[in-house]
Image (cartoon, rainbow, N blue to C red; front, side, top):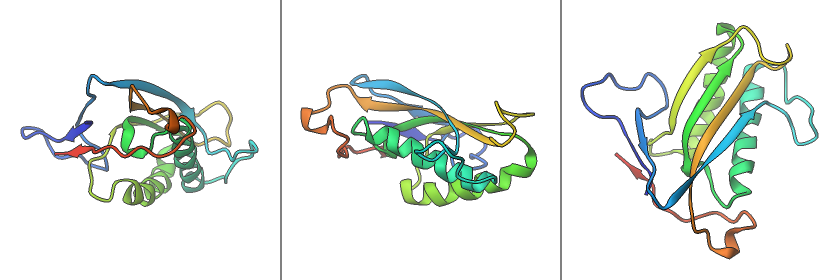
Length: 154
């Protein structure tokens, strides 16, 4: 079972993340490449941080589903935005998505960086991540069916 917690002795998280997440030995760690706010046809979801972030989270959810997993398997996210003026839009999108993904809290860890730019000027948010997927998925879940796995939130 994936465990997420915030131990005493450090300040509480300043946003939606956990300070610590542990991955049990029967899980494999899957790395998710940095995602941009691109629709399946390759077009940009919008020119603002909120639109791009919402699409990024949709892309991450699709990638997880392709492995028979879901957002509950995320253990780490790394968020990059191309200026402090884009922080609010990115945070609004994350709040909206995380309220659905994690209604009881227990968020993955997250780091946030404000950068001078990404690979092209219209790309203003990029998020990559790590997920812990049970190593022995049943064969019927190879087609992206959801996993029923308890996640411990401490």
